[in-house]
Each structure stands twice: as C-alpha cells, then as structure tokens.
Image (cartoon, rainbow, N blue to C red; front, side, top):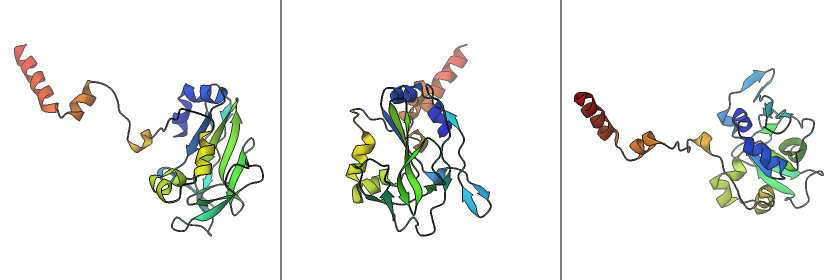
Length: 196
C-alpha cells in the first residue's frame, strides 16, 4: 500500500497546496514479522513525489487491555486540535511509537493510534486502524466531529478503495467481461481465422 502512495504525484501536489491526506490502515491485510515477544507490522520508508522521504510508523498489536470485540477509549492528546472529540472508541492496532516529525493525536493506554505530520502546506494523517471509517462504524458509532476534522476544509474528496478490488480498468476487455461478450469475441476470432 505504501509503495502505491508514492506513485501518485497528485498526493504530493495536494499536500503542497494545503490539502489533507488521510490513510487508514487495515493491518490484517499486511504480513507481519515476529520479533522477540511480539508480532509487528513493519513498514518501509516511501517517497511521496514532491516531498521528502517519509518514515512511516510501524504497527504493533493492540495492548492487552483492548481487543476487537470491545473497543477501547482512545484519548485526545494535549497536542491535538481542540475541535477533535476528547475520546473516540478504538478497535484495532496501535503504532509502536511516534516517529520524529509526527504528532500523536489520539492514544490508547499511552500508545499512539492516530498521528499527523505537516507536509508542504498540508497534512498527512495516519490511523492505525480503519475501523472508524467502516460502514458499520459510520452507521452505529459515527464520530462526526472527527470525520469533519479529517475532511479538513476541502470540498472535494477521493476515496481510494482499489485494495478492495473495486478498481475498473477501461478498455475493450472490460466491456467484454461486463456484458458477457466472451463467446461473441471468440466467434469473431474464429471467423477471422477461417477467412484468412
């Protein structure tokens, strides 16, 4: 996923022009490395075009006091904007630490779960879990103030869900698959081959 972020020059321009980019992680989609007593998700530095190389924070398993069935309370840190809610429900992983240049916005048991970093005139926001942005959470536990803050002052929003298989590749073969024209295409190929 992080490598894909680096391939979009629009992201660098968006950040340079004062936009906000929000990345929520679905840790179960990433391979984990076992080190010592725990299993952690290791990320690697990436470069967003038009900006410096970033060291993305590593994810760690949720502290033992929390789990996916019972949400913990993530508390707003002193460095977070005051328009953010004082606490939000949290299910999912946490970040190992706050890397240099990043600011922790929410923490569970003193461990960061939401962070931001200034880039150009804009900000990059990372959530250690995508749970708050799922359809179920938006229906049952909507965090309106947080969602409003995440959207910033923008009037246009882009949701990139290609990792869920919702990508559409334009072209003839897409139309063939969509409308079930595989047989017709095969017939045309056969007729053309016989004509030659």
